[in-house]
Amino acid sequence: MTNQEITDLLKKQRAYYRSGATIPVKFRVEQLKKLYITVRKYQTEINDALKSDLGKSHYEGFMCESGLVLTEISYMIKHTKKFARRKTVVTPLPQFHSHSYKQPMPYGNTLIMSPWNYPFLLTLDPLADAIAAGNTAIVKPSAYSPATSKIVEKIITECFAPEYVAVVTGGRAENTALLDQKFDFVFFTGSQAVGKEVLRHTAEHLTPAVLELGGKSPCIVDSSANIKLAAKRIVFGKYLNCGQTCVAPDYILCDRSIKDEFVMAVVAEIKKQYGENPLENKDYGKIVNEKHFARLCGLIDGTKVVIGGNTNPNTCQIAPTVMDNVTFDDAVMGEEIFGPIMPIITFDDFDAVVDDLKTKDEPLALYLFTSNKKHIKRVTTELSYGGGCINDVVIHLATSEMGFGGVGKSGMGAYHGKDGFDAFSHYKSIVDKKTWLDLPMRYQPYKSKLYEKLLHMFLK
Image (cartoon, rainbow, N blue to C red; front, side, top):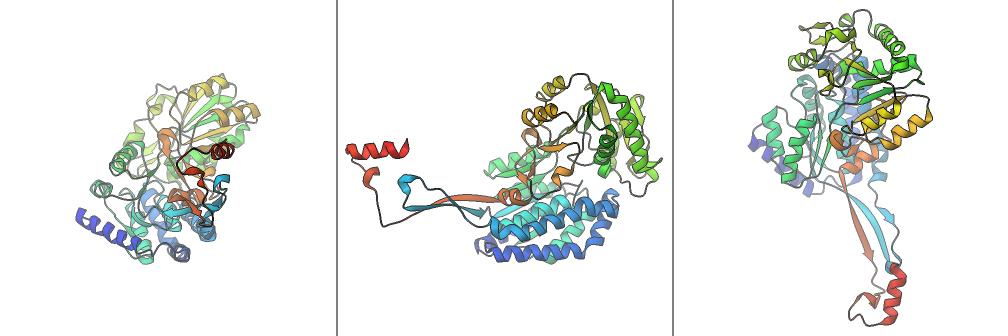
């Protein structure tokens, strides 16, 4: 799509939003129902597209993408009417003859830019929130997941008129053309580097934005952990989607006293979950493209590999890999991995680990495996991170009852459920002042001692 076509499309969406068509709650719910039905209709095609782009099995595609999308849409169908109501708040005593309330208002014309790693989930989830809040939307899926982008475009085109919700496909040129436009709100999911570019563009227009980024999310396993269960759950979360998950445990911080036992348990779980030869497992996915495949291969130090390390360049596959005796100086610790490589770093002092994490960038997620309540309290109250789990990984984002988002360099803002509705809304504070009484104390001249006493009484 050319720059002019994008400009014309946004112009039509502005006119449509200004017509007031998206404001009625009944309209919003009807559109969500239409989207829900259409996603279910194309379930097989969605799964096939995810298989084509990322090698995901149909089971994983539904569990981690389309199924979660249906859950979010269903949640918004049930709750949009409540979310859209104005909220009465307490009125200060001096204004007792008033009604004070907060009215949620759509931002208006929104842009949703989604990544390639969960291309269906991370496109349709924020779209459902945008629709529920009463906005129009232009959706820009990733060029790295073309099959999924195609089915996303098919679903949206079938559901909505382009002046309401539209899809713009393409690569960097289209991204730049979109970001050069003046939107009312931008929602971006992707890397920190691109997130910075998005924020630079939105700053030019003073446009609010939500950024869902990433980072190196640590997973701590202390000496009190249930080692077998920890290994089972960590292997699931680390190698899900071949490690191409923004909230995957990036690296393991393991207590030295149980490290050998933990490594053995992880190796056993990899064999149990993926088989003796994971590259022949039809349900094991692939790296999205050759560029990322080559980058990941460069992070593997063969001298430290405990299991895995074998690759298939023809299919862009890397077996689930574990690296032991890793230090923060190793290449694998120099960037977010975003692949099926698990570095293990040992520690002797839990408190020192927490203190050290305070000095690092805030991760999108943090995980702790422990039965020590003091350790739980320290991690949950002293460390800053987007979200996480105690004795599990990844699952905290699979709910519409809690917001999902980053903090610091891992992002800003949150969505899912009510948080998603709020992200795409501005809350206007309104005072409805009655006319039957007009207190004189606020008007000049300020000479009355009685009014001064009353003012002090009201405002103290």
